[in-house]
Length: 222
Image (cartoon, rainbow, N blue to C red; front, side):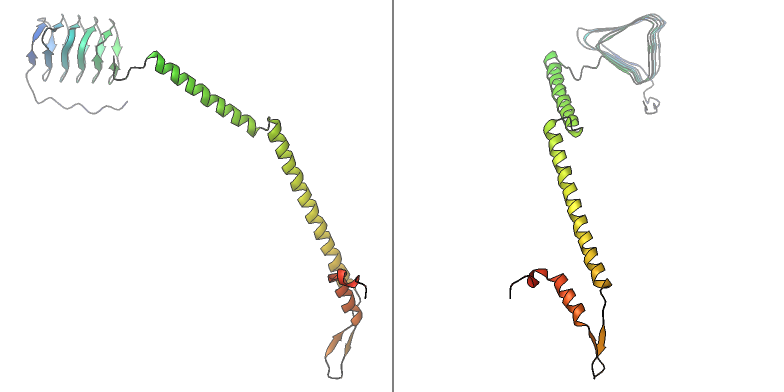
């Protein structure tokens, strides 16, 4: 996770408001804000180290920072929280209405106790049913593609037969055309010249060509 570079605080003093108890051995960097709302309190126990720009606000409960805990720079502790002994919070960690066990190491930028979105059991059940329906649809579609469905298989087979018949018909037409072409070019052609010097193609050739092109007209009774 990429975190922004922490800028030095422009406030040199620590701001404290409300019921806040600080042990004499606590070390607090500049720019720290300790805010305890009405009816709540903040307790910093022995050996606690609070990093620059950290904000601690007690709301709807108390906040206890137990012995020898280190709070990284830019940390935010809000609500009702208990930070156990010898806990190490990285920079820019947010703790909201949560308890951090003793000897824990929290990576920088972590969020603990985020309740911005709660999912109840009914919503989870609806989401599960929806996912099941989607999976069934995908499964059926996949089966149709693999032609496991008999109706789909029969339809595909019929399409294959039709395609085969078309190919055979085209081959027959092509073969007939080649035969006609061969017959025309293999026919003996004789020519004669008129007194004017024009060449005239033999009548036999013309008759065969007409018969080949228009066989139905040759079979009509005269």
